[in-house]
Image 1 (cartoon, rainbow, N blue to C red):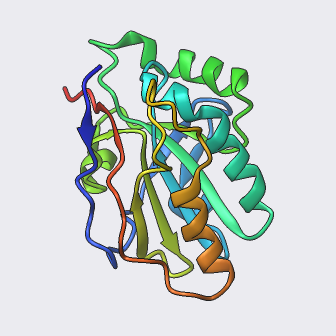
Image 2: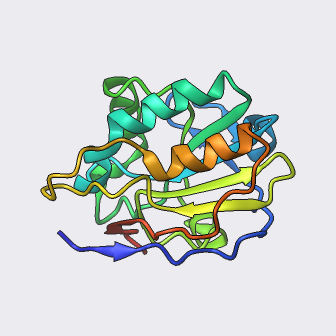
Length: 184
């Protein structure tokens, strides 16, 4: 298992716009469509990465816990499906169904969106405030496949909770670690 860290896009960065196809509905989804009143979580994931598989249940729980509180959620897969066909849109649809994703799962065929977000690995998490300025990026929590630490989403949950309390999100943030994005 390759271990690649997030590149940690600078805090305050305005969310790059996108308009991509949702693998579940086949509809175009833009940043504007999914932006939440309180904030927006953008996750770079893929179907086959063991790091993503390890946290899938928790990202669904977090989306379910916070979307009703004014947060928008979206997942994006940017892997090269020529070399990694298991990450293609048809199988993304199956992954979304199997894991009960309650958020759009978009395919970034050109990889332009991953590059715009400076995404490096899967999973990679970004939280933008109500003005679409980056306030958190990095890991879900300290759990990794095989390290014995339970998956609890602590780091991302703390950032989301700070927004709900109108408090500042801590700038002490750890990069995510996962499989590298499979570039063309």
